[in-house]
Image (cartoon, rainbow over all chains, first blue to last red):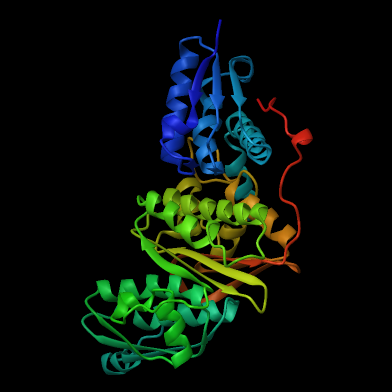
Length: 115
Length: 299
């Protein structure tokens, strides 16, 4: 089955993909495709600027609704430059941790109060 | 703040001096003093004097404080300015908000003062393009470094957009060619790190500890979306660049520089959050990631 190609540039309408609200638009498109059992090829062609806030919402949030296995098997990123890929990798690692252990942040605050 | 009879308080509010304000703890303390001296005033004329030195990027927090003063139906007078301070604040557009004509910057060292609503992201894009990415007169900046600075600025902007509940963001910068630095400040008049953490986790940390907690990787007050990468990335960048990162939030001060992290309290508070990056423009560090190291198997 051919993958559905989603252009981040087209969804956002801008080469500056920095705001969380714009990331939400991308998240919704990917999520609806995955729910329909489609494979997704996410293209970052023509994207000049990215932030972690954008990627947290666009991609990180997928780990709330889908398993790691499904995301790994169904989502592919293309035409992303090397520094942006490094940022995406951090976003993914942080997201996995965030949803795996939701109490971790509360614990770190509690520990800080007790120290 | 100690109680003062109305007459003395009126006198104190009538004339406030911000003296020798650099991007340092004591520079921010002088802005905190300005806020403390003017808060609660209503319907007065307040004369603000800037004396000796005023770092142009600090126009951002000064604008946030003075907007609060004006919103309480006070009149702000900025007529006691030494000529050098007046000129630079006219060139960066700050004084145009307070009754002065704007001046053209023939030295091309200013990064304009901008006040915008959090929803005005598109204007902010134009600002970053025209004031940083597209500036040919900042030749010492490599393309890598330029992009890294812009990314860091966006991270701060969207952080304030998401968390601060501010009505406006204020930004301003200054290029110091002799010192090979750019000092860039973004500030808001929002709830600050301390309140944000208290609301999410029910714990009241001292402001300086709240800032420090928020700068660690993966630490976020969002409950439904992962986060906490932006400030951590900025810390890494500043360390490689051998620059400095300063964060002021309420009565807390946080600084990261070559000596490490430094946390302090202010006497009084700032009504929001200030983030200043001091960037070394002589930086030859390569911020790119080698293509060979990049991997598409990120999931």
